[in-house]
Amino acid sequence: MSAAALAEARQALAAAGQLPDEEIDLAATALQLARIDAPDADWQAARAVLSAIAQRAVALALADPAADAGDGEGRRAVLARLLHEEFGFAGDSETYDDLANANLIRVIERRRGLPVALGILWLHAAEAAGWEAHGVDFPGHFLIALRGSEGPVLVDAFAGGKRLEPADLRALLRRLHGAGAELQPGMLTAMGRRAVLLRLQNNIKLRRLKAGDLAGALACTEDMLRLSPDHPLLWRDLGLINERLERNGAALAAFERALALAPPEELAADLRPRIEALRNRLN
Image (cartoon, rainbow, N blue to C red):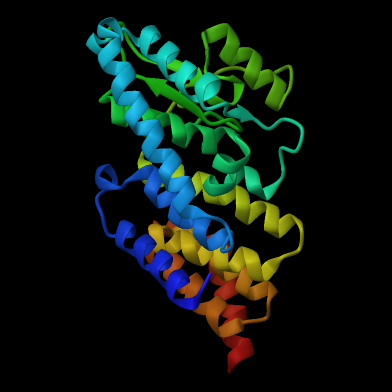
């Protein structure tokens, strides 16, 4: 990718960062994140696939009056056929930690991805069909909730669009967090669009940190802040990475910004000693 194209993608992120949450174009913004992460990938071809998905979602909604009128299970079945049968998307359980699974361009190319990446495709298709849906911040496994006249239908995009009942949620939780884990209030919290995108990108950041790629994790965090410029925990993370890179001035500025944005009781105990130590080093 040329410097101009990279700047264009980052400008698009910054513009999305200034929008109200409900006005963010989820798939288009995920595509910009993917352009930055995979500069040699064909993002225009990926955008064409997103357009094709949207067009088919509209056609299938019109062809299924019951689903279009509010049958939540019908909506789930329509979108599952569209995304997992017609377009062939599936969860990548074999190479789950591959960075490509969190890059929307690569997900579209490979037809494989993480739960949140596949979930973005579900949300994109649902929105095109005119059906209300949102991400669900389930611990360790992103889910989709489709609104229907009988109530929300919970969907696991990673499992081919399977509908999840309470017993399925409990089994999933125990598989992820141990046999003693129990469903708790707040585990099915609805996520805004910005939060979904940050969860997607956090997968890349964490994998880069695990691999020791501090420069890559730093760039990823900076891009996340373009999308969510007032997120105190992101500023804290930016400070921690800069600190590890011995960029003390940048670390200090990031920690101070985090502390200014967060309620004092949330970050003060951790950040104030770090800030004091950095100030002493810089004096």
